[in-house]
Image: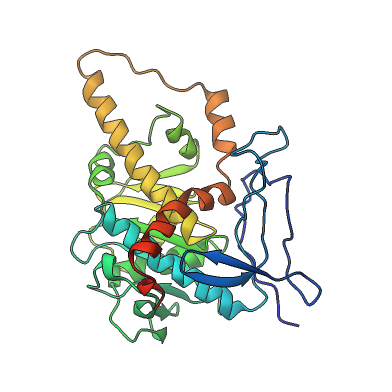
Amino acid sequence: MAQTVTTTRIASRVPLTSRMSTTLDEDAQVVRKSVGLRRVDATFMNGLSTLNGEGATIGRGFPIEGIPTFVDPYKARQWALEHMAGAFRVMARKGYLEGTAGHISVRDPVDPDTFWINPLARHFAMMRVSDLVQVNMNGEVIGGNKACINNAGFTIHSALHAARPDVNAACHFHSIHGKAWSCFNRPLEMLNQDACTFYNDHAVYDTFGGIAFEGEEGRRIAGALGDKRCAILKNHGLLTTGSTVDEAAFLFTLMENTCRAQLLAEAASASGIRKHICPHEEAEYTYRLTTPESMWLEFQPDYEYELQESGGSLLN
């Protein structure tokens, strides 16, 4: 029997208490789930009505279909690559493209010691599944598009995937507000509800080693990240991770917007206006609701929009 492929949960997250089927075998019901212009065979993993034992909810009524899991690891790969291509298009629409800088990586469900990354100099808004490149930990292209990849991207992501087996995806871009905030070499303050997503769960890499062409720089970045899911890289930008590419991508867009809000608050407070920081208890409570499942769900509107706008071409 083929091994069931599931996404890896981050240990610090609070598990869901209301679940639907989380496995797929010969006796399991196979559901044909419509997603935009395509369909995939999947079970519905994790009904997203209840987020913790205290009954906090993200929605009401019927449970929302959650992260699918697959019997066939090749189907799991295809699903991950479709969402990876969609994530690049989201980043393009949000203006995170800066020349050839920026990359997303996804650990391969078939061979977890390898990962997928974007080709060098392919515009994010044009990214398709067939553009993506599979590499091993030696930087050798072993599958997918036979194309050149970003050397700095490989340096960072290979070190990250080696150091963090719980991480299935990572995003790094040179977005404007992330770059601006990174020069302060400070963590984000819990200024609002959205910022609490990063409560005690983002690191600051306080060394700028130049463009990350050397393996040691990648290992230093991975070391600075530690067991956190996000990092601010001084004089560089932002780095986010997740158990799915959807989670990592949503965290990146949210962290970029949180940096923007922080910069606006800093500018306003320079005139003497006091900042009111969220209390620790409330910040921690809010943070505990930001599970991998809920972060995955938050990204779906953006993904579905890109799928529709592309006419399905991103799946090719």
